[in-house]
Amino acid sequence: MKTIVTIPPYADFIGEVARHPMVCGLRLNTVMPIKGSDASSYADMLRRLSQFGQPLWVDLKGRQLRVVGAAIPPYTEVKVSHRVQVDTPAPAYFSDGREYAEVVAVDGDRLILGEGPRRLIGPGESVNIVHPSLRIEGTLTDTDRAYLSAMRELGLRHVMLSFAEQTSDIDEVKTLLPNAELVLKIESQRGLTFVRQHKASLGRLMAARGDLYVEVARPHHIIRAAREVAQADPNAIVASRILESLAHHPVPSCADMSDVAFLLSAGYRTFMLGDTICQRRHSVIEALNVLQSFASEL
Image (cartoon, rainbow, N blue to C red; front, side, top):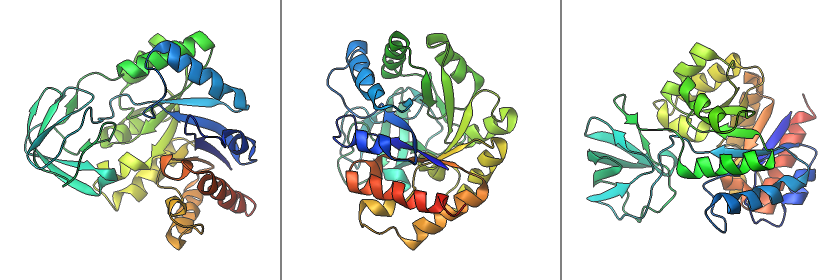
């Protein structure tokens, strides 16, 4: 049993985390801001994060929809990272599915909301449009391509690809980084269809439950989806919504402990800790210690 840990780029506890016996890799979420916004800046950051003795996984956002710019609902427009097509009205979700909005019209990369969260929607937030008619134009973002260029320059090859759904997604990454070792993040109904067709033949699979939970007619279908990914790839990784109660309390909740037990029973042996509990030293170290206690009982 091992763990991949998301690392805030400027955290002062990265070395301590990397030395923990449960850790088998570090993940850079490329949404996290760094100084500079070109391939040279990304190369400098990747070079620094590669010095901690663990494989560095660069998590590309692919076709994951993210907010560009700020908006204040209700009755506003939200600009997103890709041009989209969808039959309207269509439901959209923010805040990991906790907030609902209605998309009443679409104009390229602009979503017109009739109703939405009564707060500022900020840059970088993800948005899930859960509708079978949704079509997203393109896969990799400009930031994704810049990171791949920097990785090729440095000889790095560990790539996570968000919202993997079709073979062309993999081809696009391989064109820019031919020796890429891919983890394919399954986060949607189309991603599950991809799993049924290809299993792990094109890359190691990950059940990325943050978006997947919202996309699979939450909440009850997430159990079946997690099992399906584990059955398709005995080496699959499970990520997101793991031990998140530690972000608010030093002792994990009973529900979180039961969740880890379920994931182990489903066959997962590699976990990835997400942004929520990895922002602070005490929560990420405690999460690793909790997982280590589970590992000792296997």
